[in-house]
Image (cartoon, rainbow, N blue to C red; front, side):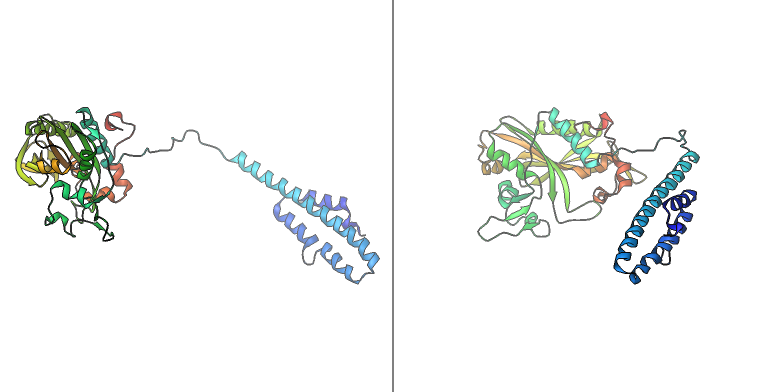
Length: 354
């Protein structure tokens, strides 16, 4: 066989190659469509069988040897290229560290932690319940009659149910948890109930899903004065204002009697509301003494026990505390918004209650 197929000759030719481009040319020279080895393989078809077997075996051995040597050289050249790049490249150790930002606590969560922390220090326990409630727990037990506007379709999300089943709703307040607690627990009772609530309403100050926290205290001697003191202390602590100006206005709720709404004084500066003082008033929560009918509906002796209840929107408290002007921002999942209004989880003072 010609010396061009000598293994030593092939090895020497491969060894003299210094680039991947030259190596590819050598591969084509031997194994291309018109390469030396390719043409020799094609010529086997015209040879006698015995001669074809002998020459074919030698050609396959040479081809395998050539491919192996070619692969070794290719790896060697590639490694050389990488080593040269490593020698030329440098790492600038004087560059500043990357700015890794920590996550932020959402204002709703932060307000919730604060609310729970304050009321826990007053001896209130935290209770929770399902988002889908029975008509009895959401309305009837709370002395809300069948003709009350809150039961209408435009305000309440009703859940489809069979004729035999009791009507179900997405709870319009967290008061059903108060009902559940009174039915299952003997007085004295002292709880707060934070959670999601649902009403068919949506604009800059209302959303179909929002958060409330309600409180309930049932014992033998609580009065309206105890209620007022509890709420005043809470708001002073929540807004961190010792000389908070406030007022209570008579109001009406089916589940409390007497009922009141609590306002706080405020001023407006550059379209931002400043809480605590001023000549304008802002409603912030509703409250009152628990209606005896509610106690009776929940199997509690209204001749022996009495108590008070209150409820407030966590979104509204958060907007006032953090200067947020549009409630829809709470649910937009905007990272810039969260970075601006969120709290640092590593700041112990801002993470109270976690």
